Image 1 (tube, rainbow, N blue to C red):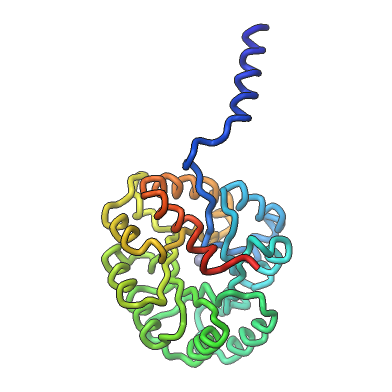
Image 2: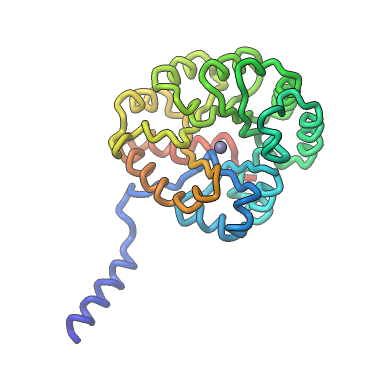
Length: 272
Ligand SMILES: [Zn+2]
C-alpha cells in the first residue's frame, strides 16, 4: 500500500517535472507532404497533432494534389507554410516541365496568394531551361517565392546559374551530395538554402559527422531539417525521426542548433 502510494507520487512528480534544458528544440520542418493517400489514413486534425507531438511547431507543406496542403493550412495558418506543387496528379511528375497546362495551373492557383514557394518538384539537368521551368522561375522571382527542388548537385547548380533572381530550397541536399559539395555551392550561391530531409548520413548511428558539422558551423543560416512524408507510412515515424534529429542537433553549439532547428525557417517564412 505504501509502496503503491510512493509510486503514484513519483509518477506525479515525473509528470510535473520540466524537460531537461536544451533537450528538445522546437522544430521547423521544411519537408512535409499531405497527399491524397494520406487524407484517408489521417484527418487533417490528426496530421496536425502528429506534427505537434513530434515537436514540429511549423512546417513547409506541399502535396499531390495541392488540396491536401490547403486542408492543413485552413486549420493552422500560423503553423503551415504552403508550397504549391506543380503536380495535379502523380502522373505530372514525369512531364510537368514541358506541359503548358501545368504552367497555367500553377499561375491560376497562385492567385490564392497563400503560397510561400513552389515545389517540391523533381527535375533533370536537361530540363533546366524547359518552358514551364522558365515560367515558374519568373513567377517565383516576381512574387518572391522559393523554389523547392529535389534535384542532383549538377542540376541545382544549373538552376541557380540560369535563374539568379530566385531563392532555392534544395530538397534533401540533393539526397546524395556530400558535405563538401554542399559547402562549395553555398559558398558560390547566396540564394541557396538546404533542407536535410532523409539525410541520415548527417549523423550515422547518432553521432554528428565531422564534415557536416564543419559546414553547419560555417553556414548556420542556410540549413533546415525536414522529415519528408512522401508515403503515408512516413507519418507514423515523424516522431521517431525528429527524436533522432534532436540528438544530432544537441551536438552542435546551441545557437547553431537553434538556427537549423527553427530560427532559419521562422526568419525566411514569418508567420502571417
Ligand atoms: Zn518530398
